[in-house]
Length: 407
Ligand code: AMP
Ligand code: MG
Image (cartoon, rainbow, N blue to C red):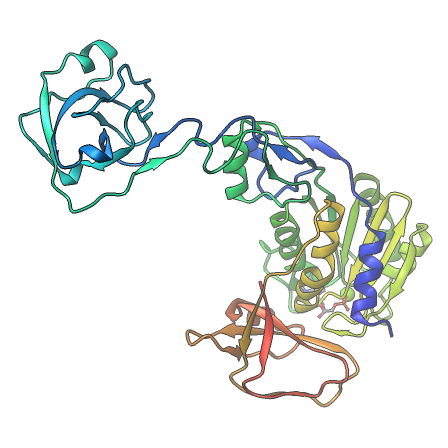
């Protein structure tokens, strides 16, 4: 049977980028940048005070200083600071010519009171002459120098960057209000199973609630995909065929849960073939998720996953997630942390790569969580991540440092 590595290669090699579009910054989170972005200006754009205090000359720190001006943020200083002088300055304001440091307000004694700062130029410069003295031991400059963070023309973000909140702040700062990002893959989700009912329904004794659609939609949605949940389809060839045709016509990627194994009513692989989907694999040497299938046509990608919730969850994480990122033009790296196992792990059959849920302890070790197999939906809620054991490996000793894939 196909190794998981080969299955992942097959899936990734099939993924063709989807094209790009402009979005507003409000819609840019979780999208992948499709252009290099340069800064249109120095940041900070001027020498900026990092403190509320007094801008003066370092060589004057031992002297009484005359306060010649009050400089709020958002105003241009009217005067330059000469010897024996200072300007009262607010955080974020332009440091005036002549000053080379800002002493913090907290380390200054006022010799006579200064009028309150007011924000109109006339009033703020009409204050009574007053004097201050620095009473601290020493001071930093407390000036953010023009261009010290970013220079005009610098490439600040590169094509392929997955936009997190911190990247969006940079885009805003450099005036890139409508970045070009990869198109969001349209992902359609079908849950097959005649035993399934919606979560808002009380199941009959022979039924269970559909959880996979909601789980898969949440997983794909969190990556920035444009997800449509097509609900439940009964296990008949006709129902699956009709639903598949509808979903295929409106999406780039179809994820079908259930109906891919060897049961009498597992029709999904046949229906895919009948709809001219070229199945590139049927089955992977991996647990959970062995019967997973993947196929392509000219303009569609199809995943069929076995219906057990752990199978759909794990297969999405390890196979579909990197695929969707590749469609969006991003070389995704899994979030792995490496930590020692706090107990040995053993298994008898070693023919498949196996994945199971683990928790990270406060001591920074990896602990197995209770897990009864691929139907055990609630075990993931106690887990921080997944670990794997490779094909051919029967035991991992306590204390071995293993990569934990965070979920
Ligand atoms: P299947 O892959 O269709 O043979 O289903 C395997 C197991 O997963 C069965 O016990 C199903 O009842 C269960 N199952 C299938 N689809 C879902 C679903 N959408 N939500 C929760 N469990 C499911
Ligand atoms: Mg089924």
